[in-house]
Amino acid sequence: MRPLRYSINVTLDGCCHHEAGLPPDEESMRYWTAEMERADALLFGRVTYEMMESAWRKPATDTWPDWMDEWQIPFAETIGRAKKYVVSSTLSAADWNAELVRGDFGQAVQRLKQEPGEGLWVGGVTLPLALADLGLIDEYEFLVQPVLAGHGPTLLAGLRERIQLEPVDRREFRSGAVALRYRPTRVTA
Image 1 (cartoon, rainbow, N blue to C red):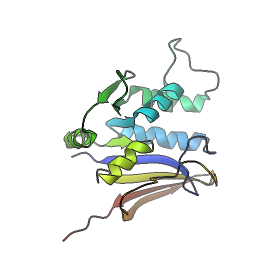
Image 2: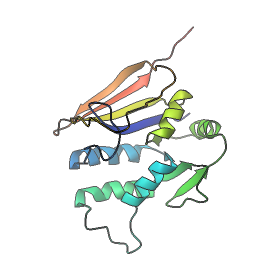
Image 3: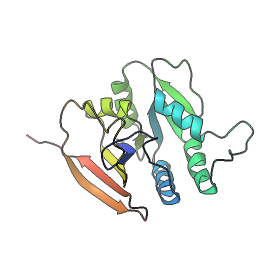
């Protein structure tokens, strides 16, 4: 069974919106590139899929946009190559190496987890909340940025029940960001 890891950038005050002062830097982009390379597939909701595609898909001109720094290209290439599953009831099609997941997404994710491999990676806000409520996330990875946003959506807002976590790994970055990895503690009877 391959584990499902939820990974996201977050501010110190819990904001997880991409425009809340979470600019990528070279070190964090190398980190996220390596994390995505470890995943067999990426799992996105529609909003995150469309946001990632608009930012990181190589244009039809086969030339990276001028805004993209050289150190961002490996991330763009990695996410472009990755197999993607998109949970959506509104999209009629998905490309960019993506497949739509329809119907009961909990059962679909459970099937994906049953396949052999190293693991699945999920990002975003809404889909991970639903997956956490279903108990399907095996690992939580937060890249905590040294920023106080003061506004915006917060991480896992609306979670139905508290999830107790145990630390697995910690890594500090030159920028002051800290990558924290946790696993849910399993309650045994």
